[in-house]
Amino acid sequence: MGFPILAMNTFAQSWGMLLPLRWYIQVLFDQAARGVPEQDSITPFMALGALAALYFLLSWLRLRAIANKPVPTAEEAVEPRRSGRISVARALADEYGRVLRDRGAFGLIVLGPIIYGLFYPQPYVGQLIRNIPIAVVDDDHSDISLTIVQALDGHEAVEVAARPTTLAEAQMALARRQVFGILSIPAGTEREVMKGATARLPAFVDSTYFLLYSRTLQGIQESVGSVRSDLSTQSARAEGSRYRAALSVSSPVEILNQPLFNPTGGYGSYVVPAAFVLILQQTLLMGTATIGGVAFERGGHEARRSRSAVKSVLGQALAHLLLALPAYVFFLVVLPRVYGFSATNRVLDLFVLAVPFVLSVSFLGQFAGSWFKRRETAVLLFIAISLPLFFLVGVAWPPEAIPPGLRAASYALPSTSGIDALVRANQMGAAFGDVFKDWARLWILAFIYAALAMISARFVTSRRGVNER
Image 1 (cartoon, one colour):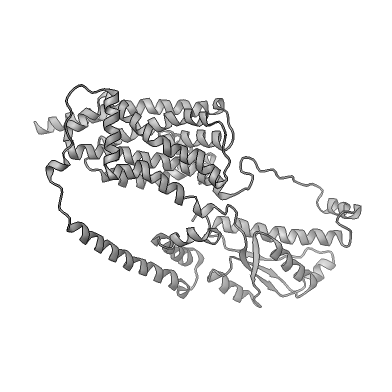
Image 2: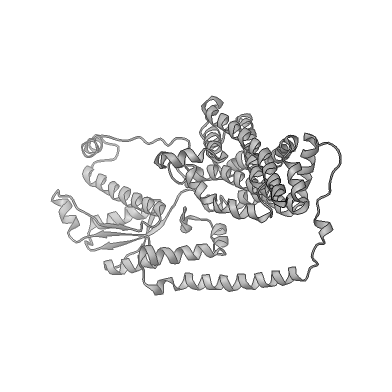
């Protein structure tokens, strides 16, 4: 949805084909948005049906294997009780070991970021969309129309993949996804140009995918614009004064474009660094809340009450910080350099921003986990809010265009201030003073959620005691 499939590398296209949503989106867009004939959606529909059968078979085989395994006894599922006073160091060690022993929490906090880091950027490795197939319907058959076609083929964004004789044939190619744009060169185009009149060339571009639309239209406009410039200079040499004079008449103002913070203008350099921070938040949030559910499953209300002590909350947060820092370094220091994204050399600034961000996420996860009785509840809840958060943080949609109420509410989550601070510091080279407000907001959130984590567990257990009486 965010980046066209035709611009992805072979690896990303291959594992994308194993996802049912990839085929469902194609059927949905073709039928609901593009209005193509039903028979043109047979291939993705059959792929969707084949995946349904395949995953049914795999699920059945896996469930049969699980059913044959012995069920853990109640004694194995009970968390051992520790005697003695709770200390921060002891809570840290207990939580660290608990995460390493539990496969679910370990997968979310430690393995999840690694898998995301390797797979998520793959579709965007190419950065720019190139060689988008388009169709040209040439009804003029003149030297000028031939020059336009050659200019289109020479542009990096588009390539002339079809030369149908009629507009109806071109529209059929567009419906079948053989092309994503159509340029029509009407009869009499060369005559209009020779008369000094403005020749109008209709361009039909698939706008269901925004990046494809803008990139295809850019390729068509720039190609036709280069032909127009050549015609305005006529036979003047490119380095001569007549050429420059003719250009100054047709284009008296020239824009010198200099992209900032994203020199390639690539989609990956724009979206991936911010998405990395959101991934770090969601995996850690799900993992810490899952541990709260695990503790209740194994130790009941007593385990929940012991986890809400001041020293326990602080020790658990420090354990989460130690567990999350390797993923943090992997996402913000290693991967940007591997994929060629802009990255700062002031790693210490990133660490200073990381501490309140990770702690606030940890405290939020502990607060949420104090309400869960089962480990899987946290995953179901936070997976459901991941996509809305992606829009609220100002990545997919500019923050200036988000309603003020929603934008203000988004600051209740660490991701809003964390993404703003970390992306500005890492990709835009902002100094610590420039992101101080975000850093302060993260510490405020850390204190608030730490207090809530200490209070909520005691509130839940005390209410449970009242109900039992």
